Image (cartoon, rainbow, N blue to C red; front, side, top):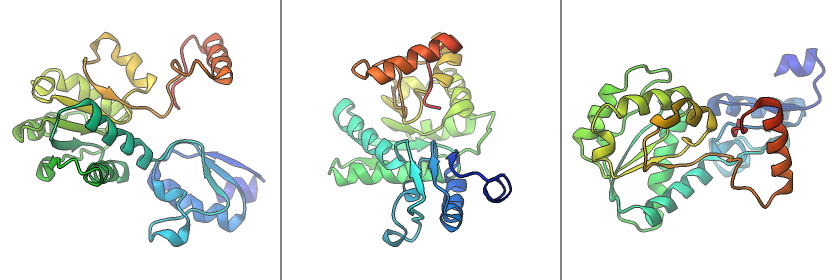
Length: 234
């Protein structure tokens, strides 16, 4: 970022994927006084004012155009409450801030709603990014017999996990598999007809239901014309 601004003369920055990286970038753009729009990283602390929380880095030069993790997981809590009967919950998610915060926020929101869920903390699994064998994590979840599983894996890891889970009794045992970021078209398209039925899934943007938005319809059609597929949230 310093190179882009100081050597290349960038007046405006857009992008940013990792929450961990984004928390390091915000103080830099503040120091250099160049506006940055984060398009992806979902940590809530990126846009929380610095004085409001010890982890917060929000400032006048840092913006986001995507929902934060807290919004995703409030939606997950409402879905769990209104659409499932699951009362015993655990999670499988990536071993970094997004995974750990996913569980903390989902748990916190459901407790705040007074739902009385039992959380099987000892069965929560956090495989490393790029894991190619989820068998140990799947086995650990099943051994604790949860009714609901929050799945905060994404991208290639989610594709690998779903394929391997279908070769076990995972989707027979778990009544409510709830994927927070699973409805990205870059996941759904590769899965094709092998995507398991009966999953709840969220995404930051879904092209098709937004029929009331003329701007969205125009965008989707232009994207289809150029790329022969609907746009993902990325």
